[in-house]
Length: 283
Image: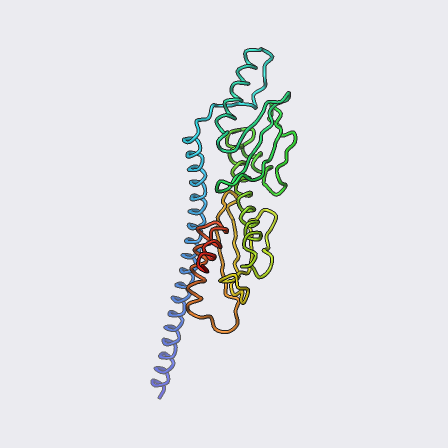
């Protein structure tokens, strides 16, 4: 009887030990999975950062290959000699002539230079912005008409004193992208009001657009709501698109396909182009 009891206790202890061992292994596997996910997330963030850096380098290389820019060093102090002043004037003129086709122009002033950024989108001439620079050591922005929500201070802190050409290029990119996003939002409201259930919602930088729209301009139903996010301030196409069905009841399978197709359209096309395609389907 004692031996049987003893055997029973040992059996129970071994059973508990085996259960604890299995539980420990499961926990180790769970922790290992969490660690793997954390490593993968870190790699994804690193790759995204590298992707963004490569995009910037490619844009700069394309710009420099398209337009041969004469070196300009406006942050160097001017000497009083007429020869040196004439050389600086020639470099400044060459710089603005090189950038003229990109919408950048400028004129020399008594203290430095006045730069004009002319923006455009798909052949449409949009707004122009101005900036007065004092050529001295260090280079100084005297006044400007750049919108307050453009990150001028950050761009200037990064490039103004060390890479003047990059500073101009980067600021021009931001202004053109902003004007392009604003133009698309304005066109959607002005040219396609029949498709909208209510006014389009946007923030000042036009990096977040939200609107409810119909499949057609009949005004009978407005089943879709779109949310467009522009995380890259130098782009005119969204980096994140969400389209949801706003109807009641079960979502028809055919509408789900249309919803997914609309997301793709918003990713790849300007807003006026998307709604022009909707108009053509009605004809």
